[in-house]
Each structure stands twice: as C-alpha cells, then as structure tokens.
Length: 616
Image (cartoon, rainbow, N blue to C red; front, side, top):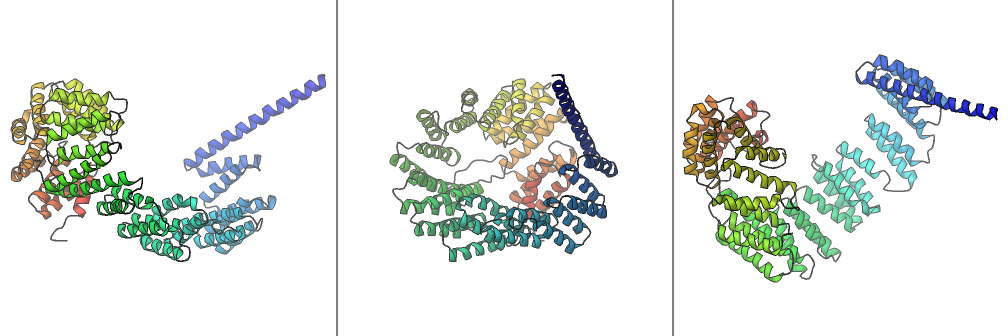
C-alpha cells in the first residue's frame, strides 16, 4: 500500500515538474519573441537555441531559430541547422521547404529546387505535398516553379480542378489574367457551386491592365467548347464588372433564350445595373421582362423598377439644371411633363397591383417627385400621409415622416416638425441612420428655439455617427454653440438666420448674416456668419459679391476653421459660377497643398482632375 502511494506521489511530482519546465520554456520563448520584435536578434537567437535544444521535437521553436538566423543573414548556419534536422528527421517535409528557401537567399537556385524535389520525393502520390512545396516557391517569388509543382500535383490527383484557385492566384499576381480566368473556368465546370467564389476572385483583379479583355477572351474560349449556363453567367458578371453593360445585357438575354429561363438572369442584370446607376441598361432589362415574361413573379418589381430607372435618369438631368453645386439654391422645376408621365406610371402600377406591398414604394416615389422635383408640397404631404395610414410598419413609413418633418420646417411649423422627428426617435423600428437624421433636425429645432444646451447634447450624439452626411455639420454647429453660448443674443440672431436659410429665404438670411459678419468682436460667430453670408450670395447668383467675401475671408482669416471650406467654395464659384477654369484649378490646387487633411481634399482632387483648362 505504501509502495502504491509512493508511486502516485512520484508520478504526481513528475507531472508538476514537467509542467513547470514547459511553462519556463514558454516564458523563455515569449522573451525571445520580444527581443526579436525589438530588433535584438542576437539575444533572441541565444534563447531560441537554448529552448530548441531542450525540446528538439518542437517545430515552433525550431522554425523560430531558423527564422532568426535568416533575419541576421546567417544563411550558412541556417543550411547547417536544416541539413542536420533533415538527417535526424528525413520525413519532415517543412524542413525541405525551409532548406530551399535558405538556398534562395544565397542565390543558389538549383540547390533550392533540388531541396524542394527531395521534399516531394517523400510522398510523390500526395497532392498536399505539391501544394506545400509550391507555397515555399511562392514565398520566394519562384512563380514558374510554383506553377510547375501545382500542375504536377493536379496531374497525380486525378481532379482537373485541383489547385485551380491556387494557380489562378499565382497567374493573377503575375498579370497573366487569361490563364487565371482559365483556371477559374475549370473550377466552375467541375464545381458549379463555386461560381460565387470565382466571381469574387475575378472581381479582385478585373481592374488590372488588360485583365478585362483577357478574362472575356478566356471565358469565350471555354464557352465555344462547353456552353454551360454557369460560364455564360460568369461572362455576364465580367462584362458588368468591366462596365460593358451592352454586352452584359446581350449575354443575359442569350442565357434566357438558350436555357428557357424565367427571366431571373435579366432581372439580376437590371437590379445590378440600377445599383451602379446604369439607368439606360437597367430600364432595358426591366422592359425586357415586362415584354417577354408577362406572367413572371418578377413583373411587379420590374414594372416599378422600370419607372424608377426612368425617374433616376431624369433626376440626373434635373440636378444639372438646378446648379446643385451650390450649398443653397433656389429650387426650380424642370421637366414637368416628363415627371408627370412618370407619376402616371406609378399610379398605373398602384391600380394594377392594389394588394401588392410594392405599391407603397410607388406612393413614396410619387411623393418624392412632388416634393423635390415639382415642389408641390401640398400634394407631397398628402401622399406621404397616405403611406403612414396604409402601413406604419412599411420601410417607407419612417422616410415619409422625415420628409414631412422637413416640409414642416420649411413652412415654419416647428411644432409639427418636432412631432414628426420625435415619432422617428421613439419608433422601435428606426435604424441608426434614421435616428441620427431625426436627432440632427431635433437639435436644430432646439437651436432655432434658443435651447442651446439641449441642442448641443443632441448634436454631440449625432456627430459620433461619422458615417452620416451631416456628421460634420453637427460638429460645426456644436462648436459654434460651445464657444458662443455666453453671447446668447447674437447666437440667437445667427439661429434665426440659419432657419431662414433652410426655408430658402436667402435674401432675408443674408441681411442677418451680414450684420453678424461685419462685427469683428464676435470672434467665432463672425467666421460662421461670413461663410453663411457667402453661401446666401451664391444662392442669389450674386457671385461677384460672394467671391469678394470668400477671398477676404481667406486673406484676413487664414487660420479660420472654415479656411478649407472657403477655399473649396471659392474654387466652385470660379468653376461653375464665373466659368473660369484656370482660376478654379489654381484654387483647387491651393486647397490640396495647404489642407492635406481636409474633408474637401478628395473632392478637390477629383474636381481638379476633371477640370478642363487652356493648358489641358
């Protein structure tokens, strides 16, 4: 009995000692890693040698030691270490891969290849061996050798699609896009379920030089010998991704005709085209479904989609006519007859599909046209109201109330506006964007009402959501309130002018802003008022006066918080207002040079690239 107890104690003690040794070695390994990260390679090497000797079977310790030798360019010592490892463990494949890498560092390519071949010889019948050694070749940028290894692995695997993704990655990295696409086509032919993965991979390289043309050629070559649906679908995707919607549409039609489809491919094409603002081709797709598949389940969506694309295309023309470059502009109605025709299309849809939930989108689109294009606010409000009555759980319910709230502000009914926005804030269905939108306008209502503390609290919550378009506006207004709260009288004057500006009463607002901007003792309010005064002048087409204000602001307030904004606005005045592309280019260039961290930097760079000047 005592002997049994003794053996148990001995075993227990051995386990404890072993655990302590393991813990000590792990701590030493962590210390070596720290030395390595700090660039103290000699200290790291000493510890790696120590722990590797203590546990020669531990591959992590061994490879860390080899890595630190390579980092110190001790290639001969690495070769010695690896050759000894192989002598002791001839079946350890990774050692051959590492040995080849060390020879590569010494520029001894033939010996590197020989080392890798020795590794493959361990088990020539295993495809996994070829992939592992190919990875070492890729790490050393021996791409042709990697391709050779993978092809040999493919041959012995008996699967034509084996390593197709690996080969495609190597070909794409070396700009051999035709070969890359061919491998991906092979993968689709043998594994159609991989189509989405293949599309994602092609999407990663399709923008490369010559990639689009080579990919199209490669897929077409496969289609000539194997005209399966998945390859046509891939070709449609490549055309769309490359921006050739005409050929994408033609190929989608071929799929429907060749495989007696139900319109799915054309519908997907139209949806994708619409998302990418290719409204002409989106309308072609929707119209094709309407004409050729009158009993399809896609008909309701295609019908409203067709009207929506016509509306979006018309919107592009409308925006150009309305000088939307201006921060504030006088809304003017254009294309009344064409918008009326689109409204008729939506109303026809509502009559034909009275029980379809999509009709709520038709109502919403009609209301948006009345509000933003025809400026008939009474009709817009009545349609928005109808949406609220039909379905409080519709995805259009909250946007409709946001629009009604903004219209209430424009007619100076702050109480009604507050109710609409609070309805959104209190809705359990409101997402973060809806909440932020509503809180932003509630903050401005508080500001216009002189409740500056409440306004600032709401603005701080809004500015934290940086993904919204008005996060920066919220931050600016919060800055104004925080720095000028003690001057509540002038802050209230600014608030009143700000509300007038929102209500498109630009002349009245400009009088208030000018009064504040002419007072040099107002400090921050003065800067805010100056930029707003310039924006009101631009809205009234008083461009000469606006340019004078902006140039004076930049001359006398170079450190102003609005210096970059003023510079950008000045450049736009020259570009779109006075039509002086040379001055516009010079001003955009000044912004890029002076304000590299500005929110307007990317917009200024894009404008400069697209700006025609006498110098080209």
